[in-house]
Image (cartoon, rainbow, N blue to C red; front, top):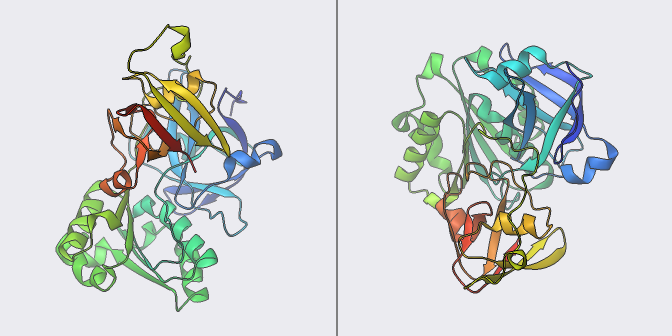
Length: 352
Protein backbone atom coordinates (compact mmCIF):
# COMPACT_ATOMS: atom_id res chain seq x y z
CA UNK A 1 0.00 0.00 0.00
CA UNK A 2 1.49 3.43 -0.91
CA UNK A 3 2.76 5.56 1.94
CA UNK A 4 0.24 8.42 2.36
CA UNK A 5 1.16 12.03 2.79
CA UNK A 6 -0.79 13.83 5.49
CA UNK A 7 -2.94 16.64 4.16
CA UNK A 8 -3.82 20.00 5.66
CA UNK A 9 -6.68 18.64 7.77
CA UNK A 10 -6.03 14.92 8.10
CA UNK A 11 -4.16 12.90 10.69
CA UNK A 12 -2.21 9.74 9.96
CA UNK A 13 -3.43 6.73 11.96
CA UNK A 14 -1.79 3.33 11.93
CA UNK A 15 -3.85 0.18 11.42
CA UNK A 16 -2.73 -2.12 14.23
CA UNK A 17 -5.17 -4.96 13.53
CA UNK A 18 -7.68 -6.05 10.91
CA UNK A 19 -10.48 -8.24 12.28
CA UNK A 20 -12.68 -10.38 10.02
CA UNK A 21 -16.07 -9.94 11.70
CA UNK A 22 -17.92 -11.89 8.97
CA UNK A 23 -17.09 -12.97 5.43
CA UNK A 24 -18.02 -9.46 4.22
CA UNK A 25 -17.22 -7.18 7.17
CA UNK A 26 -13.85 -6.13 8.55
CA UNK A 27 -12.90 -3.96 11.51
CA UNK A 28 -9.84 -1.71 11.44
CA UNK A 29 -8.28 -1.09 14.85
CA UNK A 30 -6.45 2.24 14.70
CA UNK A 31 -3.65 3.80 16.74
CA UNK A 32 -3.66 7.56 17.16
CA UNK A 33 -0.25 9.27 17.35
CA UNK A 34 0.33 11.20 20.59
CA UNK A 35 0.25 14.58 18.86
CA UNK A 36 -3.24 13.86 17.46
CA UNK A 37 -4.84 12.25 20.52
CA UNK A 38 -6.79 15.37 21.52
CA UNK A 39 -8.37 15.68 18.08
CA UNK A 40 -9.74 12.13 18.26
CA UNK A 41 -11.82 12.45 21.41
CA UNK A 42 -15.28 11.34 20.31
CA UNK A 43 -18.83 10.65 21.38
CA UNK A 44 -20.54 7.26 21.01
CA UNK A 45 -22.15 6.90 17.59
CA UNK A 46 -19.79 9.22 15.70
CA UNK A 47 -17.86 8.39 12.51
CA UNK A 48 -14.44 8.86 10.92
CA UNK A 49 -13.82 10.06 7.36
CA UNK A 50 -11.06 8.08 5.61
CA UNK A 51 -9.01 9.36 2.69
CA UNK A 52 -8.70 6.60 0.09
CA UNK A 53 -6.97 6.60 -3.29
CA UNK A 54 -9.47 6.82 -6.14
CA UNK A 55 -9.36 4.75 -9.30
CA UNK A 56 -8.02 7.71 -11.26
CA UNK A 57 -5.44 8.73 -8.69
CA UNK A 58 -7.61 11.35 -7.01
CA UNK A 59 -8.52 11.17 -3.33
CA UNK A 60 -11.98 9.90 -2.36
CA UNK A 61 -13.69 10.24 1.00
CA UNK A 62 -15.60 7.51 2.78
CA UNK A 63 -17.25 7.78 6.19
CA UNK A 64 -17.27 4.78 8.53
CA UNK A 65 -18.82 4.67 11.98
CA UNK A 66 -16.82 3.92 15.09
CA UNK A 67 -17.71 0.60 16.71
CA UNK A 68 -15.52 1.35 19.72
CA UNK A 69 -16.62 3.24 22.81
CA UNK A 70 -14.89 6.30 24.27
CA UNK A 71 -15.79 5.04 27.76
CA UNK A 72 -14.19 1.58 27.80
CA UNK A 73 -10.52 2.35 27.19
CA UNK A 74 -10.44 0.47 23.89
CA UNK A 75 -8.65 1.83 20.80
CA UNK A 76 -10.47 3.42 17.89
CA UNK A 77 -12.18 0.85 15.70
CA UNK A 78 -14.19 1.34 12.50
CA UNK A 79 -16.04 -1.46 10.74
CA UNK A 80 -16.50 -1.69 7.00
CA UNK A 81 -18.97 -4.03 5.27
CA UNK A 82 -18.35 -4.88 1.64
CA UNK A 83 -21.00 -3.40 -0.66
CA UNK A 84 -21.52 -4.84 -4.14
CA UNK A 85 -20.06 -2.29 -6.53
CA UNK A 86 -18.96 -0.05 -3.66
CA UNK A 87 -15.51 1.34 -4.42
CA UNK A 88 -14.52 2.38 -0.89
CA UNK A 89 -15.73 -0.67 1.00
CA UNK A 90 -14.14 -3.09 -1.46
CA UNK A 91 -10.85 -1.19 -1.44
CA UNK A 92 -10.69 -1.30 2.36
CA UNK A 93 -11.70 -4.95 2.64
CA UNK A 94 -9.27 -6.07 -0.09
CA UNK A 95 -6.27 -3.82 0.49
CA UNK A 96 -5.85 -2.67 4.08
CA UNK A 97 -3.64 -4.77 6.35
CA UNK A 98 -2.07 -4.32 9.79
CA UNK A 99 0.83 -1.88 9.64
CA UNK A 100 -0.73 0.34 6.98
CA UNK A 101 -1.39 4.00 7.70
CA UNK A 102 -4.52 5.87 6.72
CA UNK A 103 -5.27 9.56 6.50
CA UNK A 104 -8.29 10.30 8.64
CA UNK A 105 -10.36 13.34 9.58
CA UNK A 106 -11.30 13.80 13.27
CA UNK A 107 -14.57 12.26 14.52
CA UNK A 108 -17.87 13.87 13.55
CA UNK A 109 -21.59 13.16 13.71
CA UNK A 110 -24.71 13.86 15.75
CA UNK A 111 -26.01 10.28 16.06
CA UNK A 112 -25.23 10.20 19.76
CA UNK A 113 -27.34 10.15 22.94
CA UNK A 114 -27.46 13.26 25.07
CA UNK A 115 -28.00 11.16 28.22
CA UNK A 116 -26.35 7.77 28.68
CA UNK A 117 -28.41 7.20 31.84
CA UNK A 118 -31.66 7.12 29.88
CA UNK A 119 -33.36 3.90 28.81
CA UNK A 120 -32.63 3.40 25.11
CA UNK A 121 -34.16 1.49 22.21
CA UNK A 122 -31.63 0.75 19.47
CA UNK A 123 -32.62 -0.66 16.08
CA UNK A 124 -29.91 -1.76 13.64
CA UNK A 125 -29.71 -3.59 10.34
CA UNK A 126 -26.57 -5.09 8.83
CA UNK A 127 -23.55 -2.79 9.17
CA UNK A 128 -25.82 -0.27 10.88
CA UNK A 129 -24.85 -2.09 14.06
CA UNK A 130 -21.51 -0.24 14.07
CA UNK A 131 -22.53 3.10 15.69
CA UNK A 132 -25.26 1.30 17.62
CA UNK A 133 -22.66 -0.98 19.25
CA UNK A 134 -20.66 2.09 20.25
CA UNK A 135 -23.77 3.55 21.91
CA UNK A 136 -24.58 0.22 23.57
CA UNK A 137 -21.13 -0.22 25.10
CA UNK A 138 -21.03 3.41 26.22
CA UNK A 139 -24.44 3.26 27.89
CA UNK A 140 -23.51 0.07 29.73
CA UNK A 141 -20.08 1.35 30.79
CA UNK A 142 -20.94 4.92 31.74
CA UNK A 143 -24.72 5.09 32.11
CA UNK A 144 -27.29 3.48 34.37
CA UNK A 145 -30.27 2.89 32.09
CA UNK A 146 -31.55 -0.16 30.25
CA UNK A 147 -30.77 -0.88 26.62
CA UNK A 148 -32.89 -2.89 24.20
CA UNK A 149 -31.28 -3.67 20.85
CA UNK A 150 -33.13 -5.14 17.87
CA UNK A 151 -30.61 -6.22 15.25
CA UNK A 152 -31.79 -7.40 11.81
CA UNK A 153 -29.71 -9.49 9.38
CA UNK A 154 -30.28 -11.82 6.43
CA UNK A 155 -29.18 -14.91 8.35
CA UNK A 156 -26.97 -16.03 11.23
CA UNK A 157 -23.76 -15.80 9.19
CA UNK A 158 -24.41 -12.10 8.53
CA UNK A 159 -24.46 -11.08 12.21
CA UNK A 160 -21.57 -8.68 12.84
CA UNK A 161 -20.20 -8.59 16.42
CA UNK A 162 -22.16 -11.72 17.33
CA UNK A 163 -19.71 -12.83 20.02
CA UNK A 164 -19.28 -9.33 21.44
CA UNK A 165 -23.03 -8.87 21.73
CA UNK A 166 -23.37 -12.22 23.46
CA UNK A 167 -20.65 -11.30 25.94
CA UNK A 168 -22.26 -7.93 26.67
CA UNK A 169 -25.62 -9.62 27.26
CA UNK A 170 -24.00 -12.07 29.67
CA UNK A 171 -22.18 -9.29 31.52
CA UNK A 172 -25.29 -7.09 31.81
CA UNK A 173 -28.29 -9.46 31.91
CA UNK A 174 -30.47 -6.94 33.76
CA UNK A 175 -29.66 -4.00 31.52
CA UNK A 176 -29.14 -5.27 27.96
CA UNK A 177 -31.69 -7.17 25.91
CA UNK A 178 -30.43 -8.09 22.43
CA UNK A 179 -33.12 -9.27 20.01
CA UNK A 180 -31.82 -10.82 16.80
CA UNK A 181 -34.10 -10.61 13.75
CA UNK A 182 -33.12 -13.02 10.96
CA UNK A 183 -34.85 -12.54 7.63
CA UNK A 184 -34.27 -16.22 6.83
CA UNK A 185 -36.54 -17.10 9.75
CA UNK A 186 -38.76 -14.09 10.41
CA UNK A 187 -39.00 -12.41 7.02
CA UNK A 188 -38.24 -8.79 6.25
CA UNK A 189 -38.46 -6.40 9.25
CA UNK A 190 -41.43 -4.45 7.91
CA UNK A 191 -43.50 -2.18 10.13
CA UNK A 192 -46.35 -4.52 11.01
CA UNK A 193 -43.97 -7.37 11.87
CA UNK A 194 -41.80 -5.13 14.06
CA UNK A 195 -44.69 -3.85 16.13
CA UNK A 196 -44.82 -6.66 18.70
CA UNK A 197 -41.07 -6.55 19.28
CA UNK A 198 -40.81 -2.77 19.63
CA UNK A 199 -44.08 -1.93 21.41
CA UNK A 200 -42.80 -2.46 24.99
CA UNK A 201 -40.01 0.07 24.41
CA UNK A 202 -41.73 2.71 22.27
CA UNK A 203 -41.56 5.32 25.06
CA UNK A 204 -37.76 5.39 24.99
CA UNK A 205 -35.25 7.50 23.09
CA UNK A 206 -34.68 5.59 19.85
CA UNK A 207 -31.62 5.33 17.59
CA UNK A 208 -32.02 3.62 14.21
CA UNK A 209 -29.27 2.78 11.72
CA UNK A 210 -29.24 0.47 8.71
CA UNK A 211 -30.56 0.20 5.16
CA UNK A 212 -33.06 2.89 4.21
CA UNK A 213 -36.11 0.62 3.87
CA UNK A 214 -35.46 -0.91 7.29
CA UNK A 215 -35.12 2.50 8.91
CA UNK A 216 -38.34 3.64 7.22
CA UNK A 217 -40.16 0.56 8.52
CA UNK A 218 -38.86 1.04 12.05
CA UNK A 219 -39.84 4.71 12.11
CA UNK A 220 -43.28 3.96 10.66
CA UNK A 221 -43.81 1.29 13.29
CA UNK A 222 -42.67 3.51 16.17
CA UNK A 223 -44.77 6.46 15.09
CA UNK A 224 -47.80 4.17 14.92
CA UNK A 225 -46.97 3.06 18.46
CA UNK A 226 -46.96 6.69 19.61
CA UNK A 227 -43.24 7.45 19.76
CA UNK A 228 -42.79 11.20 19.16
CA UNK A 229 -40.81 11.94 16.02
CA UNK A 230 -38.34 14.01 18.04
CA UNK A 231 -37.30 10.90 19.98
CA UNK A 232 -36.42 8.91 16.86
CA UNK A 233 -32.88 9.48 15.61
CA UNK A 234 -31.67 8.06 12.28
CA UNK A 235 -28.12 7.71 11.01
CA UNK A 236 -27.70 8.00 7.25
CA UNK A 237 -24.84 6.47 5.29
CA UNK A 238 -23.46 8.64 2.51
CA UNK A 239 -20.48 9.08 0.19
CA UNK A 240 -18.83 12.48 -0.13
CA UNK A 241 -18.51 13.76 -3.68
CA UNK A 242 -15.83 16.42 -3.35
CA UNK A 243 -12.32 16.79 -1.94
CA UNK A 244 -12.94 17.38 1.75
CA UNK A 245 -9.38 16.94 2.94
CA UNK A 246 -7.45 20.09 2.00
CA UNK A 247 -9.03 23.27 3.28
CA UNK A 248 -10.18 25.46 0.37
CA UNK A 249 -9.26 29.11 0.29
CA UNK A 250 -11.79 30.86 2.52
CA UNK A 251 -13.95 33.69 1.33
CA UNK A 252 -12.44 37.13 2.03
CA UNK A 253 -13.28 38.60 5.40
CA UNK A 254 -15.78 41.46 5.36
CA UNK A 255 -13.14 44.08 6.10
CA UNK A 256 -11.17 43.03 3.04
CA UNK A 257 -14.03 43.71 0.62
CA UNK A 258 -15.19 47.04 2.01
CA UNK A 259 -18.36 47.70 4.03
CA UNK A 260 -21.08 45.10 3.96
CA UNK A 261 -24.59 46.47 4.15
CA UNK A 262 -26.73 44.62 6.62
CA UNK A 263 -23.84 42.55 7.94
CA UNK A 264 -24.49 40.66 11.16
CA UNK A 265 -22.17 40.05 14.08
CA UNK A 266 -21.54 36.45 15.13
CA UNK A 267 -19.96 35.35 18.40
CA UNK A 268 -18.68 31.77 18.27
CA UNK A 269 -17.57 29.55 21.15
CA UNK A 270 -15.26 26.73 20.01
CA UNK A 271 -12.76 24.68 22.01
CA UNK A 272 -13.14 26.95 25.03
CA UNK A 273 -12.41 30.15 23.10
CA UNK A 274 -14.83 32.84 21.94
CA UNK A 275 -14.33 34.72 18.67
CA UNK A 276 -16.36 37.52 17.10
CA UNK A 277 -16.64 38.17 13.36
CA UNK A 278 -18.71 40.11 10.83
CA UNK A 279 -21.18 37.81 9.09
CA UNK A 280 -22.18 39.13 5.64
CA UNK A 281 -25.73 38.32 4.51
CA UNK A 282 -26.00 35.21 2.37
CA UNK A 283 -22.55 33.95 3.37
CA UNK A 284 -22.40 30.51 5.05
CA UNK A 285 -21.14 30.64 8.62
CA UNK A 286 -18.36 28.16 7.86
CA UNK A 287 -16.88 30.50 5.22
CA UNK A 288 -16.94 33.37 7.71
CA UNK A 289 -15.15 31.32 10.36
CA UNK A 290 -12.48 30.07 7.96
CA UNK A 291 -11.91 33.62 6.75
CA UNK A 292 -11.43 34.70 10.36
CA UNK A 293 -8.81 31.99 10.93
CA UNK A 294 -11.07 29.82 13.11
CA UNK A 295 -10.35 26.09 12.73
CA UNK A 296 -14.01 25.14 12.59
CA UNK A 297 -14.77 21.47 11.88
CA UNK A 298 -16.29 20.49 8.55
CA UNK A 299 -16.28 17.70 6.03
CA UNK A 300 -18.59 17.69 3.01
CA UNK A 301 -19.60 21.41 2.78
CA UNK A 302 -22.72 20.07 1.00
CA UNK A 303 -25.17 19.80 3.91
CA UNK A 304 -25.04 16.01 3.63
CA UNK A 305 -23.00 15.16 6.73
CA UNK A 306 -22.97 16.50 10.27
CA UNK A 307 -19.29 17.30 10.78
CA UNK A 308 -19.91 21.05 10.98
CA UNK A 309 -22.92 20.89 13.31
CA UNK A 310 -23.11 23.71 15.86
CA UNK A 311 -25.88 25.23 17.97
CA UNK A 312 -27.51 28.65 17.89
CA UNK A 313 -27.84 30.02 21.42
CA UNK A 314 -29.00 33.54 20.48
CA UNK A 315 -30.33 35.12 17.30
CA UNK A 316 -31.72 33.39 14.25
CA UNK A 317 -30.29 31.73 11.15
CA UNK A 318 -31.62 29.67 8.28
CA UNK A 319 -30.06 26.75 6.41
CA UNK A 320 -29.76 26.77 2.64
CA UNK A 321 -29.68 22.97 2.55
CA UNK A 322 -30.06 20.19 5.11
CA UNK A 323 -30.06 16.45 4.53
CA UNK A 324 -28.98 15.27 7.97
CA UNK A 325 -30.54 17.19 10.88
CA UNK A 326 -34.04 16.16 11.92
CA UNK A 327 -36.86 18.29 13.30
CA UNK A 328 -35.81 17.69 16.88
CA UNK A 329 -32.21 18.75 16.16
CA UNK A 330 -33.47 21.95 14.55
CA UNK A 331 -35.87 22.62 17.42
CA UNK A 332 -32.91 22.37 19.81
CA UNK A 333 -31.01 24.99 17.82
CA UNK A 334 -28.62 22.79 15.87
CA UNK A 335 -27.57 23.95 12.41
CA UNK A 336 -25.00 23.07 9.77
CA UNK A 337 -22.34 25.78 9.65
CA UNK A 338 -21.69 25.14 5.96
CA UNK A 339 -25.34 25.97 5.17
CA UNK A 340 -26.26 28.55 7.83
CA UNK A 341 -26.83 32.21 6.90
CA UNK A 342 -27.92 34.96 9.33
CA UNK A 343 -31.42 36.32 9.80
CA UNK A 344 -30.74 38.68 12.73
CA UNK A 345 -28.15 41.38 13.36
CA UNK A 346 -26.52 39.44 16.19
CA UNK A 347 -26.04 35.67 16.49
CA UNK A 348 -24.33 33.54 19.11
CA UNK A 349 -23.06 30.07 18.21
CA UNK A 350 -21.51 27.30 20.26
CA UNK A 351 -19.76 24.09 19.22
CA UNK A 352 -19.85 22.61 22.73
